[in-house]
Image (cartoon, rainbow, N blue to C red; front, side):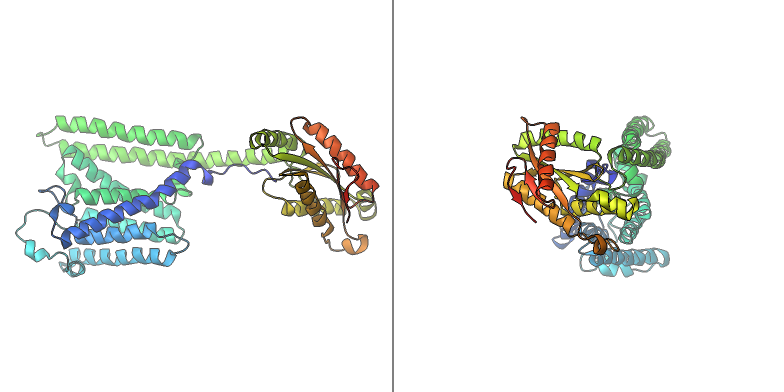
Length: 463
């Protein structure tokens, strides 16, 4: 078992945000389909929640359905389908932009079976896909495409800008400023907000979002600053806008509040990214220093000091689980002759190769250590004495099966003598190691390349 420091990628907060992205997309899918069903059954409240307010255009609902599906599909099993949703959405948005530029109505053909705008020419209420909605959906399609091409930074930038659009609309609904939400209905605003959040946080393990969600000091400070900064501007802006009603300045001040809020969020996010980069370099140095202190540099296994510390943790865990721990002391047979005849460089290669063989033969719960010189120690959790002997024999056979070029053919097969001893509340680590040492020397006495148990000192599993 080799020491490995915890990595930011596996931090619980990042895992949580990645985990909620697909449920959020599923909620968006449900609301989008509900809006479309409102056109099918002619139930206006499903796509126009405020009777006199703007409605969610059927093309908007189709696009949010595609985006939600693209976010919900597993990236590894359905990458083509997810990308297809984004590209189809991009095609529909392009048609909408062409219509806006040249006065055509090609995009209306997509939704003609649901809604005919010619039948509602005299309806003063908005039921169009506004430019703010178009821009938001375009950015979300691009974010999905960038994500599929592993461009996390570009995906996050597009998602971040897209998130600003429904946020401005929400501010408009909260402040009563119609110019802020325009043709964007409350349903479209909600869908855009959830899709933008989902698109932004689905790449939480990389880029700027990773820096903001980092468990380290930079991330913690950034999260507090983002929440406090935005809420302060939003609440203060609401109070001041209410006091400026009928003065003609409420729209101007509302725009100032929104711009200030997003400037703070952007500044904090960039600061968090810079801080995370510096802190990551510091953590890398600390991790390397910690590895030097805890790992044997030749074999990559724990050294004696680190083994003692980890063994204490294993003993505490063993008490709770009520299982059995065994110490195995392994000594390389005839190692002095190897050094004398082949040199210390070959001896080092032999030790490193043995360590690798032991690691490959061990379980995830086993604790391995280079105890010193040609001695290795393993701490294993087993159900019975016979289980310890089986694991020890597995280690012995792994070493015996090693082949080293220009060495094995001359020297012959490598071997180890192994002594096993129990470790429990009655027998501490030092005593268990001493008992295993006695058993190991008994294995040497019986001819080497075998396993001897301290509990059954005269029982050997012969090679």
